[in-house]
Image (cartoon, rainbow, N blue to C red; front, top):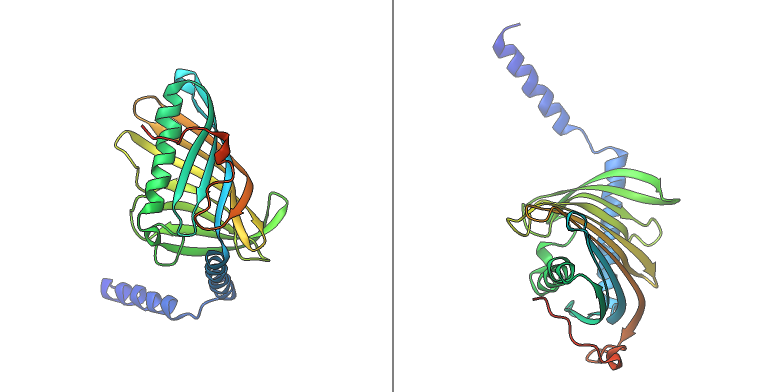
Amino acid sequence: MNRFAIIVLVFAGTLAVQAEPPDAKTEAGAEILSKYQEALQRQNEVRKDVAMDVTMEATIPKLKKHGRMNALRRISSLGKITYKILGFSGDDTVKKEVMARYMTAEVEAAQGKRDQIGITPENYEFKYKGQHEKEARLVHVFELKPRHKRLGLFKGELWVDPASFLPVREFGRLVKNPSVFVKKMEFVRKYDIRDGVAYLVQLDSRTDTRIVGRAELHIDYGNFQTQDPGEEPVEEARGASLATAH
């Protein structure tokens, strides 16, 4: 067979593959993804201002440094995030270089163009992996691949609840590091679904840096309380100072 014939066959095979109709799994994934987007839209419409208690624990193993922080976190109806530190124990290096940096990055991301980092078809390619049992529950699993190398986007997986079509877990690795001092950043976000809203209840992140090595951060979120717009956080009376990120 000559070279021209091989090229023709390869090209014809490519056309045949492209012309195949989507299989049942692909169609099912597209339907689930559509319901996932609808569920998020409903959540955004009904969610009001919410405040929650936050417990952060961070370590820098190479330096043998550790810290623990209690804070109040509030999300406004417009998505603005604020923190109020209620207490801290441990090493100040952990507080400044891990916890404060994380809070600053989250606050700035919420103030930016959220549509550019949302888990949407505009930002990601979704590959449906099927329904699987994960951690004693059935979930729809999607593999995520960013369409852009943009800060805040990640390569990883999304788990979707079959009943509400809201997220129960997101995890992966950032495709763009937030600093030249960061070599790699991975995370896991876990959600709890309550009254049609997916609340973030736990976050774990691991950052490999060029200066101090690995930095680990674990955050628990709880005691969620809905507030009227403009109302002061329910824990304001504790009298703690506002969180700073310096």
